[in-house]
Image: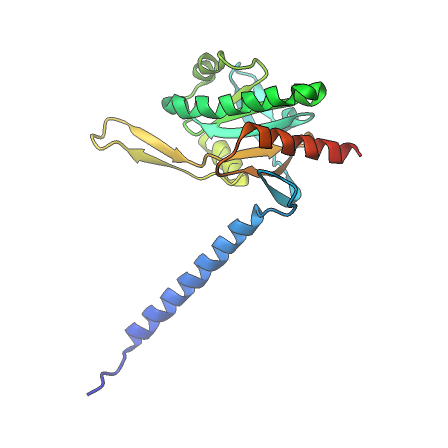
Length: 216
């Protein structure tokens, strides 16, 4: 005898269908937001149109207020990290140092290209702690901290996700976060992201192309 399917089964299927549709559109949106739109880029996943950076108020490692206006006039390579995972942060900053070295054949472009670190652990990474960490890198590299709300806002704009994961013995935590490098242009707009496996030569070449195209 065939059993009749009750309303609960029907609603469950409808709910699963709706969740599936929502997941599809979410992945489609996120995937296309940073889709490559110009094949000549080597590493950059560019936005179709640069997205202006919303107002923000953070503190740099010297305790100075950092608003979005301070991004102006620079090619800003922005990474997220925290001093509690200093090996990964050093790796990201070392890569950007190599990018600057690659730009030595374009002295002015090299001068206005810099790294900006935004901490994902603002309750621990004070300006003093960030200053102690950053002293080994180029003096024009900046590290920023601020309120959790401000960090979350800029992270969302730059496509960065993060989550706190307690250690097994509950004595501490780690923070998993995106490892992409965001490129913010001299007009204070997000151009795109460097994601996946990247190298200094390709990043430098992409920045050089962008700067050259805008100068023409």
